[in-house]
Length: 211
Image (tube, rainbow, N blue to C red; front, side):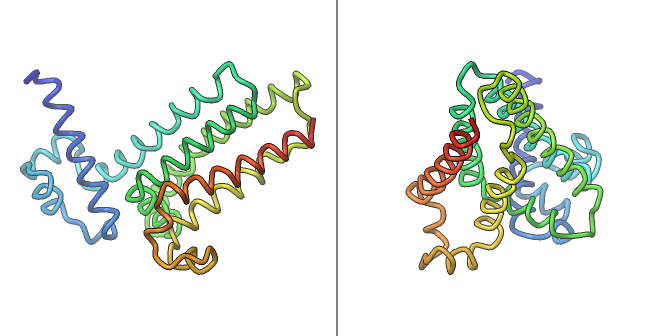
């Protein structure tokens, strides 16, 4: 194997294992030994790639959120009507939340705790960039006269993310509200389609009544 590819593969393997273990247990409950054993590497390799468990944790969060940044930046720059780009953003996030519950559990936990404020600030800073990309898209459309200036994009985004975080972070409560018998029902393609339909309808109403 190419040494460079082997380096990337091992680093990515450690990150994947870290994502799994940190989603199952709190940060303090996961040891470097646990990470090394699960990733089938020696402890020194974790130190070599990341320096410490803390840096591994921060790298995991930063890398996953930066992937999202790249995707959102690509979506808002597409040559499509703003409503279609918003539909694409909704699709992206529904797929992201549904497809990677492990990472969302980590984010939800860190955002609700005060024990690692620097990690919470890292998350906020990365997420803020996605908001800025989306707001810039709306400002451009408002300046062009394609949509009205009264669009409250912040409240719309808040509604969407609050719903998604509630579903991933408090599934038992969500099951009660949504009248679901089992948590697994929140993770089906059919339920994902229900979320898409609801928020796409919301976006459509918002944009067509503010033109």
